[in-house]
Image 1 (cartoon, helix red, strand yellow):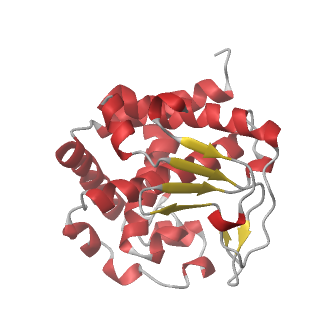
Image 2 (image 1 turned 30 degrees about the vertical axis):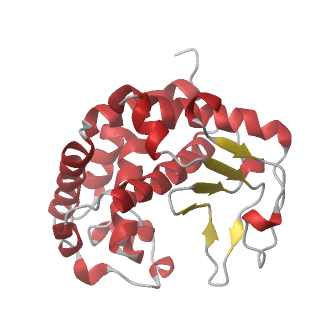
Length: 235
């Protein structure tokens, strides 16, 4: 992705990855379809709202692609990682299909999640976010379902891992699911959890405006619209 000075590394290099994991190289035929979707659903919406310089300055300078998932000892699967704002590693590349909604949303959720980490590590989010659901964070988040997490005011089970993960999961879910999809998720939560999710939403929107001068709802509309166009190109 030359215009944005982002290197896409798909040739297998063990030194870029966790050497204790059994990983599979990406299939070369998967690289262009995946990165084209990344460009359309991550770069272009942000560029439209924040300008070229924003992406050129804050986007990671390297994407490293891995064909397989990265399996963890606790039974969970790592789908992506961000390292110091410099590099994003994307896994499960070999199973990616640009016409499969679950695959597109999974990869884009991962990218938006990791990029949100870069943003809050540059300008931190308000501390009051950590006080909305302070008792719900747990290192064993993977033992709970998304439905259970939602009932406690967390948008996904992984949100319960830590406040930082909660914050970026909110951003990623709101962007990928769009406003109507996110509203449906909130509406499905118990009445006691809905105000907690709405307060988190308000802080996310305020953070994007005050820290980055980005209209989050406009970004959300553009991102979800781009996903729809990828999945239904004739629509």
